[in-house]
Image (cartoon, rainbow over all chains, first blue to last red; front, top):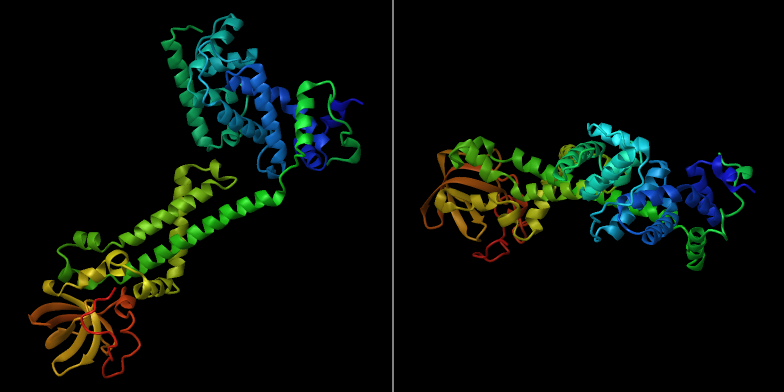
Length: 194
Length: 273
């Protein structure tokens, strides 16, 4: 049987309902979000692959235990990203940032969008641009890095970011603005030209 | 809607994926199951119930404050204070303001911790908390709950005159021309009054003394005037006590006054506490 075909026409919310009755169905949700969340963890933290997978395991255990707490007030993706975000904070906050940058996987378009949003003329060499963005993100304060990651790399909208980090929309907007300023400042400080 | 045909029948890649296998094993070994829905509902209800309780307490503070401010002797403030500013500053119900502030903060915390609370900015939740307390408190004040609550606290709360209603202390200064107490009996030149220290005063009433419409033994009174002799007070102005009645009516004063006089069960010289 083609498993992905079996679940592809079900929404997250429908899978949640089924997973409450059948644990095996929950693994479909795991499959659906596993790669995205692993990438998100790597973008937020500097842990190695094994640790990232451990965090992800704990995230899914928490998600499963709290399935009944999910309701239609917010998107399931926002809810699972929130749990991941909280898990990362509780596991990772005490670890020191790695100066050589984060294990960030940046899509080409995301790199261009970020450079455009920060109002910086990007160089033609996309790989170099991505490398420099990774480096600068590594120097940023956690609160700034997390909103930039969510906005430009995870491509979440303001409402989703608000639901994930549990802050009002206005606060999210101002955090993103300040994060962009901090990014620019860090560029100057590190004497890096994009 | 999910139909039977849409229900996945098997676990994705179970058996050939280390991550999925490990997760599946953890779920099965510990026999983990989703926490029941009532647990989350209970948590929500507790947050809302605590918020409602905080709102009730804050509203009660507002209703008592409305009562205190309304009967704050505004008409005679020029006889008791140098300026309007001093009058307001010295007669503000600080205890109730602090009480209100505390419960508005608790209400704010509860609203913030509801499921949707994070979506609203701090100023909005704080304003909503204050506004809700003021609106509910104002509505409650129409039912005289503020007066009843002040009377109850006056009759029973420890340190009422020192903390809850400092005006009682303000009026208990005969050396400064202010006397408060419970009328005990009429006399040829006026009446007798027992003050908060348990002292029995002879009150002299002159023709120009401004009197309240109703004067009978057992009435709590505030007097403005001067000491003319040992335990003798000449009154210029006599007013019935508003807030603080309960304090002056504390047992064993209360409930034993005939139309002629009061039978004092409490030995003279014993202060009210």
